[in-house]
Image (cartoon, rainbow, N blue to C red; front, top):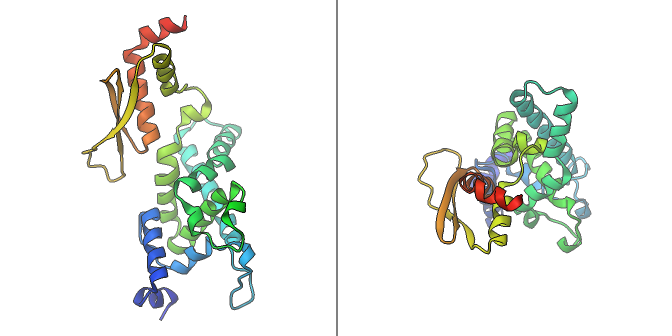
Length: 247
């Protein structure tokens, strides 16, 4: 009987809770839950396997870093056929920056699963990104490249990778609209409303109201992206007024 079979036959409550948490984060069922447990073991525990090798997330972090780089590189290669090596490298660096990886780890709430002898309040910001990379490494070992690519597409590429924004060509329409509302002393608010779309990938629906009048609606794979899209539509509806203010 394999390790995974033993675990799934009669999982302790802690294992069962952890399994459900990972399933929720990943969007699919883990097969070898022990691999994911290791992705959250801090070196301060000084755990070792049966062969005396250290058991912590650092080796998985190394593997996850490589998988992230590969999958992001593939996406950029396909999306920007005219980009040379220098351009592609620069764009990849923006996507997998330590700051961005830390934000991803925070968004997924990964820190609460970390086991350590060090109080979590003592960790630096990079723990979030480190554990995110370790999780990617665990996915690769457990389910292989296709599931790893699927996870990165859903959690990184779809919500966050916008080529034009990475190039710095597109300004934040949300910032422009908010600035205009504040100068004109107009109330505004972004609201998430029920999304009746049938997309396999979860979408967020957002409407932007100014002075309690709905100015624009938009759908996207993240709330942030939907707000930016709605702001862009509102911006063009109000473009003449906004540009007159800037003159």
